[in-house]
Structures are given as structure tokens and as C-alpha cells.
View 1 (cartoon, rainbow, N blue to C red):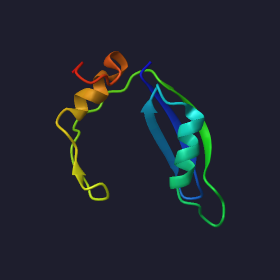
View 2: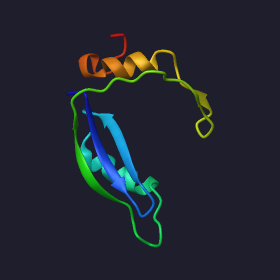
View 3: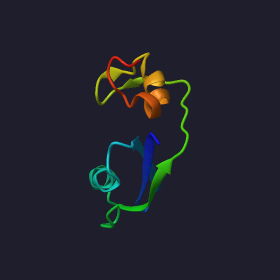
Length: 92
């Protein structure tokens, strides 16, 4: 499969979170509930979860000001080959 997702919602928006299939839905949802804002004392909650049959990304790039790091040239290939190589270092 390669990828899973969970959607966390609050009063403002739905937040789709895509993650590798080696992680577990409930663990990702638990952590994401800690980072999605609580609004009007209503805590964020998961509203759906599942598997992704096919995912292809194009145009990876950019800078994270909070982590103070750039994306890497290899990131696009890492994401697109994850269902086959599972992120194993040296397999790219």
C-alpha cells in the first residue's frame, strides 16, 4: 500500500494528514490532535481514516522557517518510491 491518512477536524477546517503505512492510525491521530488548534474549547477530533492506493507528488521544494531547513532534492523520489522501497536508506 505505502500510505495511510487520517482527517482531523476542528471548528475552522479539516486537516488531512498523510503518512507512511508503517505508522498506526491511532498513534498519528493522537499526536495530530495535539497540534491542531482547539477552538472555542472544542478539541480537534479525527473524523475519517484510511489507506491511499496511489500517491504521486511533483514539485517538491521550499524552506521550513520553523525547522530552519530546506527540502532535499531526493525528497520527491523518496515519497514517490515509498510504496516500493519503504524509505530504506541506500535503496534510492
